[in-house]
Length: 29
Image (cartoon, rainbow, N blue to C red; front, side):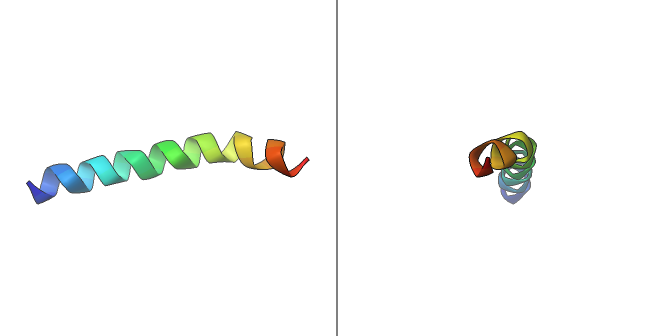
């Protein structure tokens, strides 16, 4: 269903954001 796909994409984006916050600066330094 579109609702399930939207929720999955939203969770994936949220997870990527949470992981990207600590990983970004770590890779930059």
